[in-house]
Picture 1 (cartoon, helix red, strand yellow):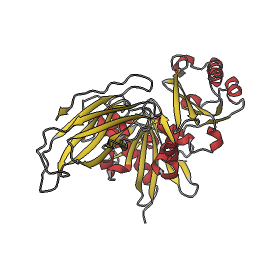
Picture 2 (picture 1 turned 45 degrees about the vertical axis):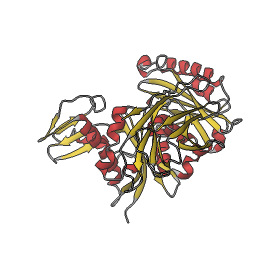
Picture 3 (picture 1 turned 60 degrees about the horizontal axis):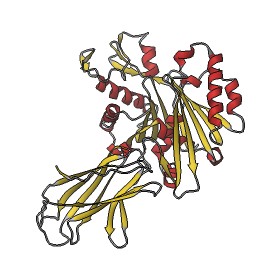
Picture 4 (picture 1 turned 180 degrees about the vertical axis):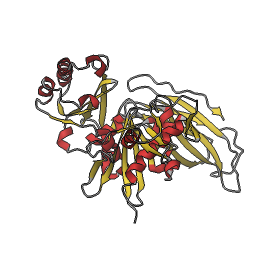
Amino acid sequence: MADSFYIGMDLCSDFTQLSYYNDIKREPESVSQLNNKETYMMPNILFYSVDSKRWYVGGEASEARFTEQGVVIDGIFENLGNKAPVKVGSGEYTYPELFLMMVKLHIDSFLYRYEDAVVKKLVISVPEYNPEIYALLSQLYSEIGVPEDCIEITSHLDSGLYYIFNQQTDLWINSVALYDYNADGLNYYRIDISRNRKPEIVSVIHEDYSEQMSLSIYGNDTYSMDNDFAKIAEHENKQAYISSVFLTGIGFSDKWMKKSTNVLCQGRRVFVGQNIYTKGACYRAVGGEYGRFYDRFYVETKENVLYDVGIIIDEETEEFVPIVTGGKQWYNTKGRIEVILDNTDRLKLSYRSIGGDIEKQEVVRIHGIPKRPNKTTKLSIEVEYDSPLEGAVIIKDLGFGKLFPTTNKIYRKEFVLPKPGQDSEVKEEMQDV
């Protein structure tokens, strides 16, 4: 029987990390390079060997380039917009094709270690949403031969939350600090939990310190870097009671923290690791008990939807049927229901904020459908998002079987919603498509 794996992938511009769910240990385990068991960060380069007529990726590519004749392909992320084909051996490739090949080979390099291994679920974590990369990764399922729903794309922030909330509870009994110090600089995230509200809300505050702290500013001056980071940490520690601190990114890979360590460790536990995002993505891949914090909390971040969107099906009781629920990333939030109209050609849409302090309703008329007997018009209602507060309700006439065939009419109702505490704008026009 083939091994099937839940896999988390941290995909950055320079390197990739993989982890898989270890059923025995009941936790994600990082995947090391084949040629270096001490290294988990796999460089994002490809090498085509003219000698062996095969592709290498990561650490194997770095090694093979010095022992075999061939072509090195790097800078793949930076060149995704480059339309010029790249000649390799007897073939030509575009950079998007090379990108997908690279990702697939990273996965294959792990699967090849096991006989007949397959992907059960793969979650790919990228630093933040990028429409071009998201569109490319959405094609990956066909490249590795799995159903489309076996692959999800998420962000570092979401993966960080999955990792943190699957640690022991006392680490997040109060606020949690996450410092990400990478090649672009230092970013700080504070995760707060509002327990005095129902539902309980997890909110994330983000501070960008990249102009004050970046690896290029300091060079070898680790003394100044330590002092500056200590000042930032001291300031942030005063803003909330923090139970634990997580440090990730290549900036924390060297042992330069002395003064800042003393500041961070005062009354709290501190963890340093380069594999937070890949392991968080792996927890998301497994799902189930590892995603229960999303069931318990409404998660409010810069990329998460802040409203439930649905319809009112009873005017007297104001019974609400959700189409989508908030608290998840807007680019991964879609929903669909079907309804049968009962003595009406109208729908009442409702937008309800996470905290319950805003509810907006509007009535839309479904026009242009031929008159049919009562309860013989079925509609599909979908919601899709363009950002956390903008999207559209899409209504499709499904007809009613062979007796009353569909007209194929599609209605699109766009909406723009406010952040809680602001006035809303809900566009009134309905567009026939």
